[in-house]
Length: 474
Image (cartoon, rainbow, N blue to C red; front, top):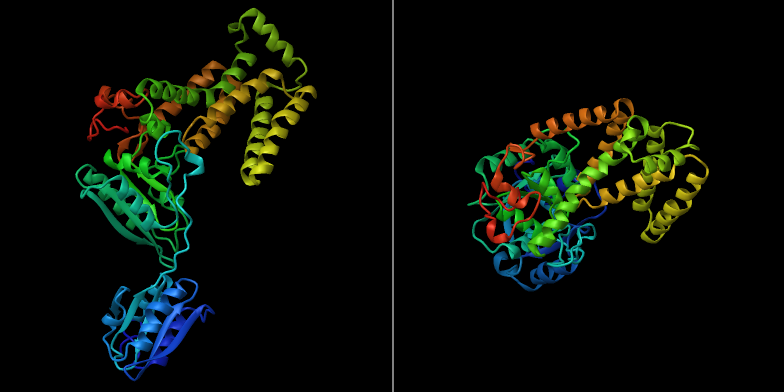
């Protein structure tokens, strides 16, 4: 006798019993016994995954009123498929479908598509606000997200491949790319790594990101994530590959370079001179965000002679009451800032704003008057914090915030030589880093002069070509 995982039982009770056992006798499994063509039949579904109104109106009512009509005629408004394997039918239940068994035909059963739709409305992502342009964002429904992308790109060349990841709780993943623009080698590499993911379940796109990175031990992100359809569409038209997960409103974009993390949709909505100035300020914030505390420590501890004489006396005067070295002072303030930042994120918005005010004014003023830190260090850490907030990508911002700690240690031991040593190691790492085989520092290393049109600055759009070697996003 064939295994019930490959075929169905010859009786209704046997099939229903198998499904109950497979689903561990869960209470939200419902069985409706009906009559079809004078024979006993059963409708099986999970009430937590289906639309009960749709089932009552489009399944049960037609069955009671349809008489001897064929099932394809009864369920005209629903997608109807035949299936022979009970394990596949059980998996369909988890996807929001219902199963229909009839006693007069126990060689197969029917799968009806009746999923529930509990989705939030399309709104602008809170962490990617823009001034000018479309104000819609992705939601947790993959179909709606694909619809938004196709609204951005009405092209027959936009290709979508579906994959299922997870052995215990599989999730649908969509790989999107422009068939005439994307590098076939990158597409093949992306799909190969997706198929190589062996997990029981995938909770978020962060799981996919960690399993697919070229260098998982690098602090720098090798995927660009966004919740904006217009941002995603722009990268698709530049030949990039996009990965999206059912139930997650985030799109992962590969391959990317370091400069992609400093570009925003506003860059292409504003005039090129304004956009170039703003982008230059962002890139300048990269230097300030992780080098300023290290330079301050090196100057105070080793190279105070580089300061003008009046500034030297001002800095030294603020340091006279501080009882420990500049490194400890900087570490203390940076850790306090990280604590306040994390508290502001985890608390409700109204309370979070209060924490920011209390932390910035009350604690900051009190800690200086108590002599634990100097006023100049407060200024340095404040400028560093503001610079880190200018970075559009939260992942890149987090990486920069962590990088300043080892650089401060180098500065406290060797001064400017330690900073130079740390920056050299960092630059070598960035030169070696790749995102799906593409250089991370492109177009800077390897040097591509044409790529500079949209790297440090944003040249006029009519000078930028959106094809392979001259992509709008490098």
